[in-house]
Image (cartoon, rainbow, N blue to C red):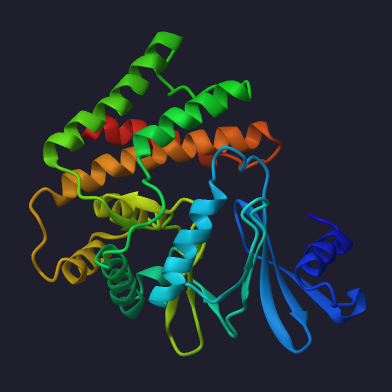
Length: 299
């Protein structure tokens, strides 16, 4: 945890006239970043300070532009300040906000609204600053792992490096399968953890944290949403029926399973890199890797 004077100093770099004794801090949630609610001069903000190991993973110029596009669509809270060099961001605080959880995200009204948010984003016809190619990301994270001196987990039945390499080849080989099915690039958020959905006092939901945003296949977006909150079959059906307006494509389940394998593998890599830089996520990375391997066999 950062010392309060360090956080205050970050805030005063944005608002220099703010006196330290007039600033009230409160730590708020965040898995990969350090977030503080800041009360100053009768107004409330959220200050986002990037966590360990973000270098090489996140392109801040992309995040800034994509966040502004989302703000213009009304699906991101108003941005007060964004530093594309440091990644420090200040946004307006949503009063009486509820951060969704794996359980509450699957409430009926929330499901309908989230499906509508994704439908609005994917059909907006805007061009995000970058493409998010999950296979390129896996290659990039592979390089960052090697640079950090870290290695991928081994499944319980693995006993040699060659077997690890074979799994990697199978993962990368899924690109050919997706290309044969056809990929439709649309503006995407690409990080559907429940904590990135914030509900205000009127019931409106905002989508925050656009670090991994970029043009991607909407099926990947839906796959991440279902995966991160372990959606029930009924919750999946509600979202898909709303999103596709009752006309769900026949290959949707297969596409979603492929992307879920890829997401789990990518975030296992992400965890290994972050932990090599000093973070500790317990069994999170191992769980995601094993689930990817189990779904790969299922596929």
